[in-house]
Image (cartoon, rainbow, N blue to C red; front, top):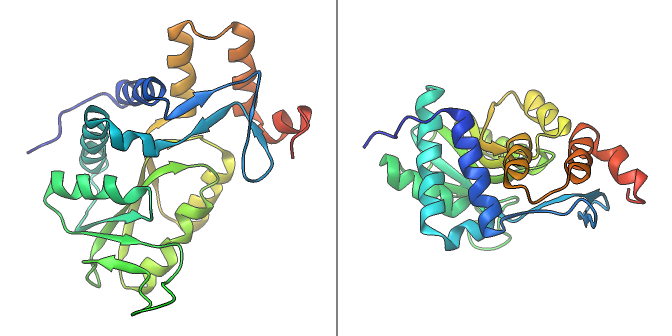
Length: 222
């Protein structure tokens, strides 16, 4: 079954609408969220909520399959990141008929001490599935153990990215491309279309996007 063709921008907006509709992404420029790092942000993302919506997760699996085709990514095995990437990797593997594995942030401290579970044969071309990319540090951290296991990671695919410069740098240093279904700039465009936010709110969120550190510091965050 071949994935349907969809313009990447149209897909990014469609996924953004899904995420906003189900509350997987929340926008609150006037009462910002505090991230674990201590930084303040007008956006908070919990893509685990997509698991509860069959239509959304089907569009995500379809989108990932389309990314494989559009970017001509060679793929022998789909690898999910623990834990949020695992179900989406499973749906993509089922959609494409490919084997699946998953990778932990660190090896187990008991049993066989595995960090990678499932079928991940040495020399296989792999794609890594993530739910969210922020700074890119956790996403790229799993690339080394996969490389050590003899897998050739062709790309990381994610549902959503904040589009932060730190993530761009992390993937550049890792030498692995990142492809996402949606992103913060598409999210803001969809939010503007909805009419749910004032021009001041939209300007504030755009300011965060341009310089998250300054936006946070100006409001008392780290």
